[in-house]
Image (cartoon, rainbow, N blue to C red; front, side, top):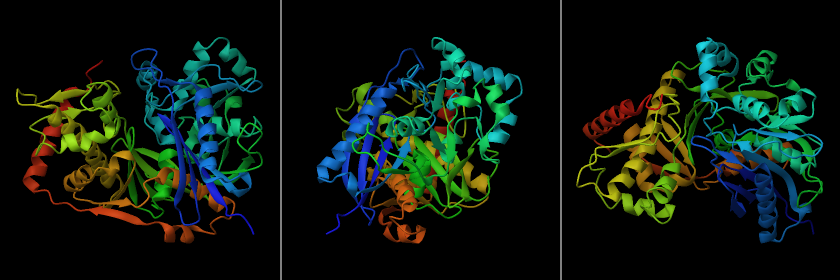
Amino acid sequence: MAKTKYILALDQGTTSSRALIVDREGNVRSVAQKEFRQIFPKSGWVEHDPNEIWSSQAGVAAEAMAKMSIDASQIAGVGISNQRETAIVWDRKTGEPVYNAIVWQDRRTSAFCDELKKAGLAEKIRQKTGLVLDAYFSATKVRWILDNAPDARKRAQAGELAFGTVDSWLVWKLTDGRVHATDVSNASRTLLFNIHEQKWDAELCKLFDVPPSMLPDVKSSSEVVGTTGTAFAAAGIPIAGMAGDQQAALFGNMCTEEGMIKNTYGTGCFIVMNTGAAAKDSKNNLLTTIAWKLGGQVTYALEGSIFIGGAVVQWLRDGLKCIACSREVEALASSVPDNGGVYVVPAFAGLGAPYWDQYARGAIFGLTRGTTNAHIARACLESIAFQTKDVLDAMADDAGIPIAELRVDGGASINNDLMEFQAGLTQVKVVRPQTLETTALGAAFFAGLAVGYWKDLAEIRAIWKKGAQFESHMAAERRAELLKNWHKAVSRVRDWDR
C-alpha cells in the first residue's frame, strides 16, 4: 500500500522558524516552531545569526516530520516562505556568513538613503523597482556589509561571496551549496531588481555598489529549483516553491483575482492587493511589487508595510511588563469600554506606509491620572487597526476601486475584538479563514502545484475555507472622532528623530 504524501512548508519568520506538514485538503497536520535570538548591537540595529536561522529551520522540519512519524519518501515537495528584506552575505566555498544577517527592521543605512534622495535618485529607483528608497530594503544592507566586514568588498569583487535574502540562504543550505537561487517576489524587495524587465538591474547594482556576481538566479515562485542534500533531514526532496512571506500569505488566502486584498497581522502588518498583470503605480507611497510568477505569468501587487503590528503586544509584554504573555492582551484591553482618550503611535522603527518617515518615533498621547494599563493595552491594539485603515484608504485610491472585503491572517487576527474594531473602522467586511497558517499554506500551494500534488488553482480554491466574518457596527460619529485623534497623534511624531 502506497504511503500518504504531504507537502513540507518552511516558514522562516522574523522571530521564529516554523515547519508545517500540509495534506491534500489544505489541512495543517503538524507544526513545529523554534524562536531564535534577536541581536541589537546598537540603537536601531537589528541582526540575526544566519547559522541559527538555518539550524532552527532544519530542526523544526525534522521535528514536524517526526511528530507524524513520516519519512522523506512521504514529502512530495518543500515550499519556502521567508522574512523578505533581511540580507545575508556568505562565502561561496565555506558557506560561512561574513557578517550577521541584517534584518528588515534595521535602520543603520538611513543616512545613506538620505544621500541618494538628496542626489535626486529616489524617483529613478522607484520607477525601476516599484519601491520607495528606504533602509528597509536589502541593497543598502548588502553595501554596508561589504564596506564593514573584513575584506568583504575585495572578496565580493573576486567572486568569492554570495548575497541572498533568507530564502536564498535556506536553498543554499538545503542543497549543500549546489543552488544559489531566489524567486521573483523576493528579488523584487532588494532595490536591485527591475520589476518590469524582471531581471537584476546593472545600473542599480552600480548605484548600490553591489557586484552582480553576488546575486542569485531568479526563478518563478512555483518550480523545482533543486533537491535537498545530506545536510537536511532527508536527501532528494524537491524544493519546489519559494515566495516572500507576504506574497505567500496573499496566495495562501487565495487572493488570486485582481482587486483581492489581505492583511497579515504579524510582527508588522502587511497589506497586499492583487493587481493582476499590471504593475500599478502608487501616488500614495505604497509599494508596487511582484506577487508571484506562476505558469510563466507574473502577477503584480500593491503593498503597504506597517513596521509595528503585533510587535506592539511584545512591547507591552517585554518593555512595559503590562502582561506576562501575549495572549493576555485581549482580556486586558477588553476590560475597559474604550481607549479612555489614549492613543499609541508605535513608530518604534519609524513609520511605514503610507508615511514612510524613518525619523518618526513612538509616543503615547492622552494620558491622564485615570489612565490604566488596560487603556494603554487597548490603544496599542487599536493602533494596529488605525495603521491598517490608513493603508487601505491609500490602496483604494491607487487602485481606483472600493475595497469590499479584507482577508486576514497572522497571530493578532485571532483577536475577535480587534477584528470587529477593524471592520468598524474601515467599513470593510473582514474575513478570517479557517486555517490562519496562510503564509505556510501559500508556500505549500506553490510547491504542490510545481510537483503535481495539486493539479491546478481551481483545485486549491475549492479547499480554501472561510472561518469567521466581521461586519461594521461602529457609529459614524465615533469612527470620525477616533480617526481625527489618531491622525492628530501621528502628526505629532513625524520627523521626531531628525
